[in-house]
Length: 370
Image (tube, rainbow, N blue to C red; front, side, top):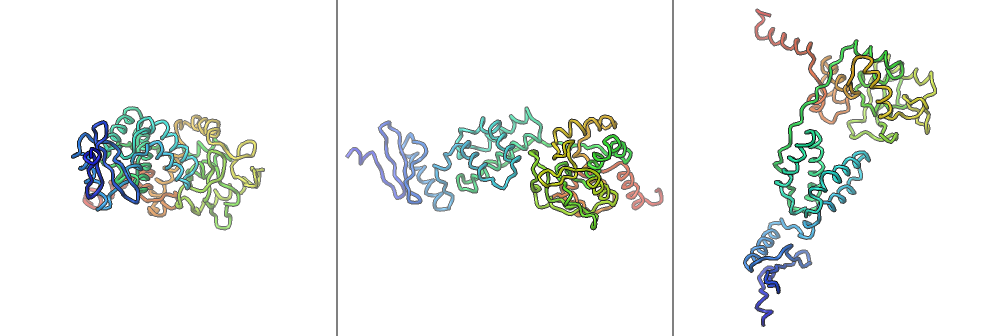
């Protein structure tokens, strides 16, 4: 009789008083018995919990408490394993962020217990130590993991909402003139000067230039095919996105010099790949070595200290837009997935273009004074 008095059945679920005096709530769903993740101090509280579970089931918003109780660290491992289409460098970066920045804060926390307030506190803590762009990468990784949990119906809704991130300041890149480029090309020498011109004239990324092979030079079409790039492990890999695969028309002098460069020297037929640009041993370039031994000393000697190879992409975008090329053409040549990136991130207005714009507006609105 005492057991019957201690246990009360409802239309949905049941409550039971434990020897400790606290109340347990249980119910059935998906053919399994589920117990509330915690006990309650009163029968009324246990009944209220069951009512909420019944409501969630009826409106299709029910989440298995056992899944919501999975620790964040375990979820992060699942997420990393699911990203099979990611490049290895991206996987390594995400793993580093998880181990060093996410697990120390959320690692042991059940994913269903992570709230927007705790995420905002983490972001604010990172912002006090790291640059805004670094904070953005940490948060992007966290958001992707919790979005995976939502898509997998482990939580009802991702807590990554309404989060205030620090403002990422626009990177100011140098505007070089033709004399600067010629001077740097002279210091680099013929071969490495051609490497630089591929960045400045074609807007190629370093990895795209370093991964350029002879079979991708089309002399008859005066073009090059960009469909691979050199990874940090010296392997040829596909571009990050479909937009990165493109055929670029080249100035005649550049394609002729690239073909002549390979014809005049024994350029790295390592593994039969035939790289256009190689190191002294005829093998694929290493970015770290190339930057330290070739690029930085040449820039310093040319009076362009601090110049990054990636700045040449900005220069190429500015030249494309400034010379009258439409935005879609500039986007396609640079391999951007959106025209907004071409305009907002890379293209920079030059002083001459700004002066021309001011004069044009003046002539249109007040021609008598122009």
